[in-house]
Image (cartoon, rainbow, N blue to C red; front, side, top):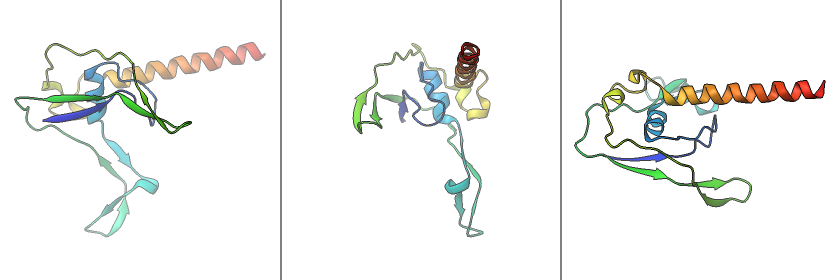
Length: 132
């Protein structure tokens, strides 16, 4: 099995996948298709809200993981190399990922998003206090 994982999540939170486990968790996280991005149902021939995601049903003998270390700079429209540190375990245990995103017990990505939002809110509060 070949998996290509991004280091940076360009859309959404901007949180960097600092570990292979976090990148895999983010890869398995389902996307909500709604609004202009709705799924077109072939049975009812209309657009509907839907969840799109990936679930591993069986652990492969060999997993080849490539890290996407290039991203697009939207100001210059040039490719930029991502040099962020990414940790990885000596042995990757896929058991937590076999039930899809819902089966992951300790969601690292969600914790990091929450931590980043708390930090941003604290910075906003600090700036508001300076202005008063």
